[in-house]
Length: 347
Image 1 (cartoon, helix red, strand yellow):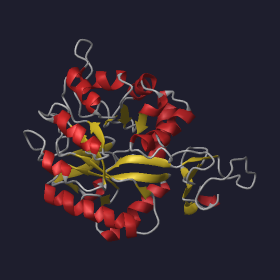
Image 2 (cartoon, one colour):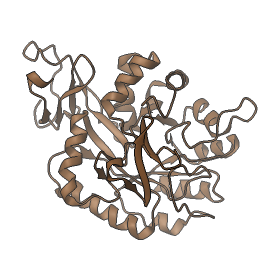
Image 3 (cartoon, rainbow, N blue to C red):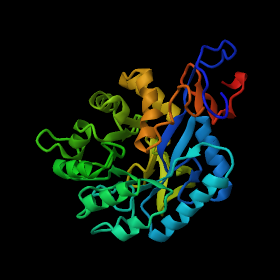
Image 4 (cartoon, one colour):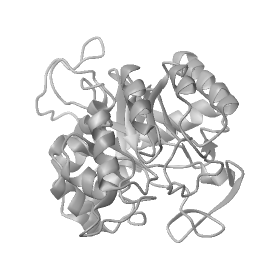
């Protein structure tokens, strides 16, 4: 590695404790982790969430904000921008994922989703730190909103939706290129009314993200998604939340039955890590390791317009993760700098 880039790839006998070295993971949907919530964190929390991400092999990420008010979004976006520029070493910040506020009819754990059309003037004024926006294609002016966001260079994702198959196709035609946590908070797949999932799984213009924690999706559904989509159109995300803060957007959250949940049992993100998502995908869904690794690295990087990331090739940025034989992370590099390392006796 020279100047933060990969200069050669060859077997290395001097690193026997590393079972596998591969491209660093890219997580494009992170609401928080453990005791840090992106929606409420302070600058003092930044090193903590960086450390958590590096410990699971994540070298680039999208801090994610769920539905909130314009004032709160403005405050959070400014904070993330500042921390990304001055917060010290950590994973690359690719930009913020706004999961809301203009979701479709399946709100899930989101509170305060506004009714009516999307505010196009507000979209036009969003700062450049916004990288992804998830919206509902059934919104009355969704097509216009999607085109506006695409013109701004924002990746448009569909999600939290009860849209028809035709509405979803129209959104894809307008420029949507991602489906957020496919199957979750979404109208189901029916053999006569394929709905948004039918569009997402059969149209190769759009990638789909999935949460492979064994709770959000049955392993057979994970296998189905990988079988249905091309290699670069299946994206693993954690949708992790800072559930230990106990409050997410004013709702009480506790961890039970495998994930963070509201009092009524609604899932509120996950406690998944990206290295575990890869492990689950391989162990329980019969997906080959190279394909699972791609879904955690180059595929999400490409979706957000950063195709140079998530690649183990000469000339690419030296963002790397070393894995143990059980798939857990033992070392992580960003731009060739070793930022996470587990000693031999702990790996």
